Picture 1 (cartoon, rainbow, N blue to C red):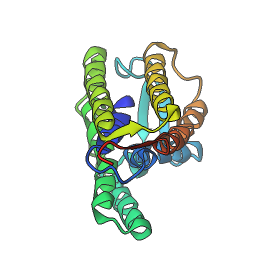
Picture 2 (picture 1 turned 180 degrees about the vertical axis):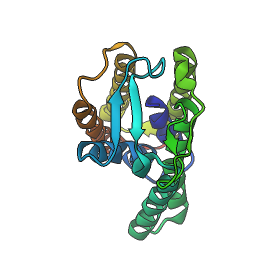
Picture 3 (picture 1 turned 45 degrees about the vertical axis):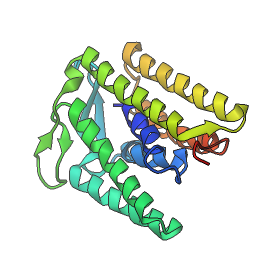
Picture 4 (picture 1 turned 120 degrees about the vertical axis):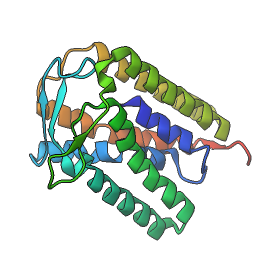
Length: 218
């Protein structure tokens, strides 16, 4: 799942408008932000295997530290506690922790049974929606469009940057999503890692957008 995670971040602004959109993206994408680094340094593994599922050519061989259920719960606690220490806002901290866990829950729906539960066991989970391209697009599209709607309910642009920046991000995410569907498989696992690290730019983009928008109730 890709745009669905960003949809969850966008929607969360309607729950709590205090954290920046960049912070919400950071939490909702957290395990996909650390996974590329673990991949590049050889701790976790993925293989390019066209036909592994109908939607993606990636075969996730070993990634218990970024995407294992127990690990994700620990990451969620660390993100929540870290935010609370810095900002002293426990409601927002809880929201961010839940967003980290939401990533695994959404992945659970689309992945085949390759999501580890515990690092020391072979048990894995996944409902396999990626075996249907149409159903995957419908689910992600619904989450993403719902997120856009809820974010626009919660914020309004204070200048052209706030409007253009937001909609350019939306268009960019849609283009990337389409290219992932119709484009050729990645050339190497290293390329997957470096492209994955570029998602940090989307987090920074979220911070920039929110600097040019404000809550609708302010």
